Amino acid sequence: MIQTQRRLVMLDENVKNAMSQIGAQLSSRLDALTALVEVTRDYARPEGEALLEAVNAKRSLITAKSTPDDVRRQKIF
Image 1 (cartoon, helix red, strand yellow):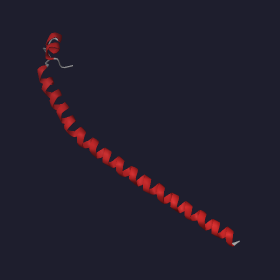
Image 2 (cartoon, one colour; image 1 turned 135 degrees about the vertical axis):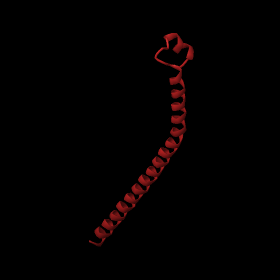
Image 3 (spheres, one colour; image 1 turned 60 degrees about the horizontal axis):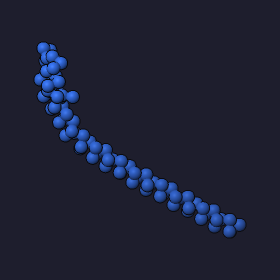
Image 4 (cartoon, one colour; image 1 turned 30 degrees about the vertical axis):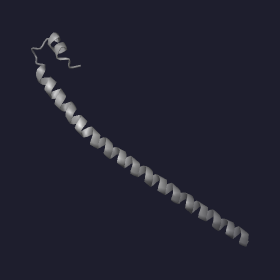
């Protein structure tokens, strides 16, 4: 009976240890994912602003009176 109790205690400790390791890994992954999101957000902001500036600049070059040749000469696409 004592041997069975020791075995159950050992198994219980193994389960607690495994759950603790899983929690640490999940926390680490969440931290890495959060950092990746921040880096992506920081990178995307200037890229998005540059894209909007380019689109707005090219938008002013094309008017309702523009011909297809005018658009081709602008090398927009």
